Image (cartoon, rainbow, N blue to C red; front, side, top):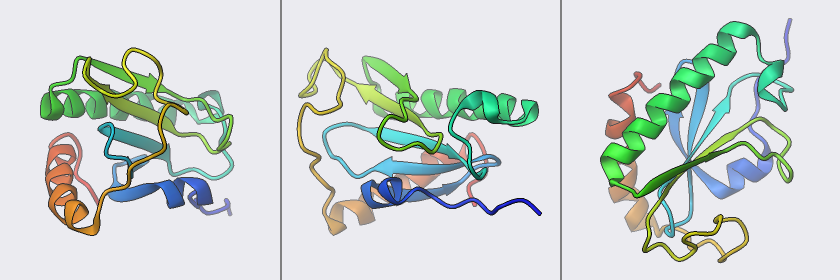
Length: 142
């Protein structure tokens, strides 16, 4: 029997859970500076995309494309940054960050530029249902 999926504690601390697509858990970065989605394949002990089985690699790619399209349609950004660094959090996760020429870090990468500005509870109550609708159009969210 394979080991169950569990979310890395740092990802859990930094994000809000939107739900699950067929492969990935969708996490919203708790930072008002940028529209920022993180896809985490629900597979145990995976650090790199090549470690996924071939079908999961294909599904991750499909989910990444769907996430990017939904983000850019919903937020009308100037650019979408997609990255899988894993230097601080070893669990495989793909960042999808909508960038605007007016955002505080433009044109530099977002990492380490500014401390996160968490959403208030009230903002979360307004934002999360809208995001779930946005992302459920690509794949059903569970």
